Length: 245
Image 1 (cartoon, rainbow, N blue to C red):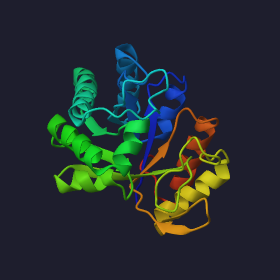
Image 2 (image 1 turned 120 degrees about the vertical axis):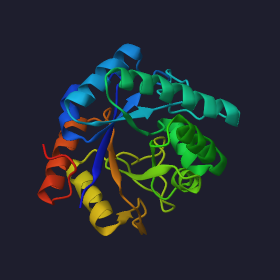
Image 3 (image 1 turned 180 degrees about the vertical axis):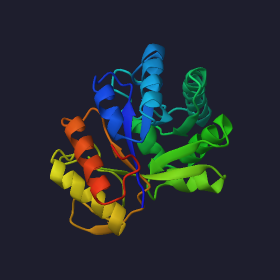
């Protein structure tokens, strides 16, 4: 039993090099919410050195709010912004002799895709048009996954180590209390439950089903490095790690 452990990278947090050895997939910011071409080149090089899958992490153009504010723009514009960002990172990745592995929308774009069928469909099409072999990382059980599957795009159902869940399977919005999990032991317990039991406990105490194929840890969390090390070690212990480091 294996599980992919992914992390958002190239966002200027400063801990990428320390986290990279403990993950199997990196979602690299493409300049719209964070990062630039220099950062992308450096992060791609680090991913290659650490045998980590490389993914594009496209966002709304919103550096001021770190890509976490909703933007209601035409669907054609959403398609274009995804295409542009994926193409840029794909070009950089190929320049270094590697392949782009996946696409994971960032922040508000990710959450809007999860809850809005049409946005999910547009993003799925952009991923398909960017490369037939690209995998879309999306919120488990959401429109993001369903719409991608509907047009033949490969998917990875994503769950979160450092976020809490609502009864409908959506993440608790960051604007609400208790949206983040800072306690390492609670994070580990949630991750193991999602992987081994296929369920997660919501903020209200309800147990709901969930499919876990890739687990996300945010690099901007208060204890991101401690958390990623602990989860990596725990997954190895339970023989479900995709990266034995």
